Length: 461
Image (cartoon, rainbow, N blue to C red; front, top):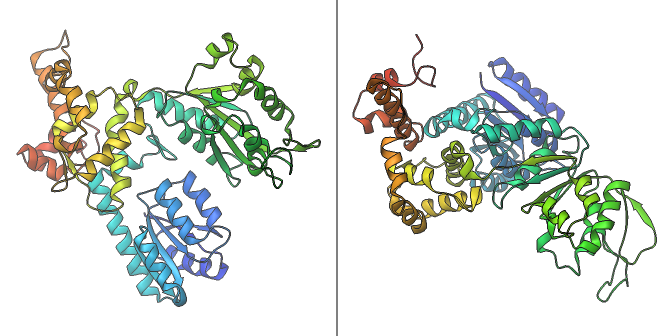
């Protein structure tokens, strides 16, 4: 049964659409505006979104863009008055499947809904629907196939509803901001703003003003009162990335703001109450900085009430291919999903990824830029990956033969290697088992018979 979310600030339209679609057996949920719809999209999976364009405070175009970020595989149909057909066409350029003018005919509405759902099912089949849609693998916009990242997602679920200050640690490029945004999205503050700030990018002379604001005339160039980020994030979440870059002299003021929920603007004499949750991140060892006298110990313990550590990509190789598919799906935006050569799969899995997830995303963008015949080949990869692979014969041998395992019969060993190879070929075809069977030169029935028992698509006894 397809699950459909309807967003419209007109109660009459909501009620009518609900009645029509329920009568056809669809699972329907309603959102009285774009903000409510966005919140539902963050917490639940849907097959289709039907959204009005004219809504407040979040309009249909904004909701469409957020849907593409949150749930790139959800189909979207826009509702529009005749006067805004041009906007609806623009919405289709942004990734909407179609638009329906108001007033609409019921049979045309139902036909459009059917076509949209059929298209999304076809698209999902191409890219391996389960690999993208299972909630245990995706949390918000986080790919979590590996056990370490599943544990991170479980931690997010547990801490998001609390008011606790949280420290997120991990190497650059591991996705600390994504984790912070997920915590905000699943918290009671999700309707409020999420403001990320890279502390390392702020000049030392301006960082206090940026965080706390300033009053007119407090320094040269302060021609008017300025609102700081603590005020701007009212009712929401302030994410302080690379907090290790905060100057030592400013750390005491930051500690006071977090402890007392009060701030004083630069040059001001009054204190203001602030309503904001603080999430912080660091790519350096703050405990080491505390020992070196570079970071206040009391601030460190205030920030680290709960810590979430994101492992580097090289420590969670199970996430590499799902992440690659995820980034491809984002970039293709509904276009035909490309296939991937086995050599590329091997190179991606054996590369050390010093730049972590961000580097993998850049590599995928590079591959798609130089795509030929809708196929990702070795030639589309950045040269540094190929050089690294060719200079590591151990990785090539492991990719071809797998690690040697004692205590296995030859039959068991060959069966295990066969399963691995089948999975590699299916992954290279974007989950398309028909194409995989053709590539392997076997029948589809033989492929199903050889698949591990219980795997999606494998017949059950």
